[in-house]
Length: 307
Ligand code: SF4
Image (cartoon, rainbow, N blue to C red; front, top):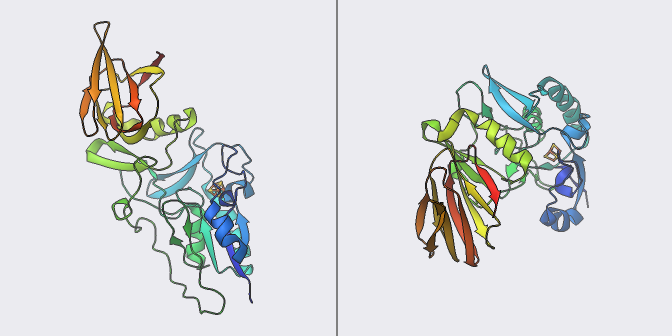
């Protein structure tokens, strides 16, 4: 039987090649699909020589062009990535791939979930650099797979392969056509009544710094919408100088506490009940039964102090 050969973003196999030295191993791919196929792993950023760990990158639209730049240094890697992608895609064609599985939302690998930072006031979504190059060479046609990875596993060798082109930049489906979990993909509400999903949100300092920088132009009007588990009482107080925060308890049972005139004002919440944390008021929470809560938070300048 002929071998099915698939290209794959190597972090999905568990290779520790991500910017932070981690991986995004997809066990369903590795354990279920893996025995049936031959993987051809690719990590564009490592193969480009950027090393591990490295500065994270994002896509920025500037003067009508999509550029691949470092989130802190703003170093522009577009030209070198384009040159690398030309070489690498030619090699992948020689591998006679039947499809590929690509990490979604990666500026280098992702297909449709990459949301470029808008530098010129426009709006839109685009493909990662590598997949754009693949699209132009018609290696195969990737398709989305679930929330995380995208895959383009073409049919097995015995079945003729259709090779339609990918749509060009900004013609990909909108997020509204693609449901997501608000507990992992948070949403940033910005000026102009915009709502921008932020996938794989992390509470790490690096991620928060990148997030704040990306949406800095929204100023105090930027809000983060998220669902977070309330599994234990908070060990910190926090406050939001930029504005008022809406809190909705979705499940479980909690008492939220606001510090007003030096005293703790307690707000007992049942599922479905909500309250507002006033601007700059210190607040915390005691969790009686674990559950989840929805927050709409003006996060700019948020402060914490130990409880
Ligand atoms: S998403 Fe692509 S560029 Fe990023 S670590 Fe994975 S393979 Fe490398």
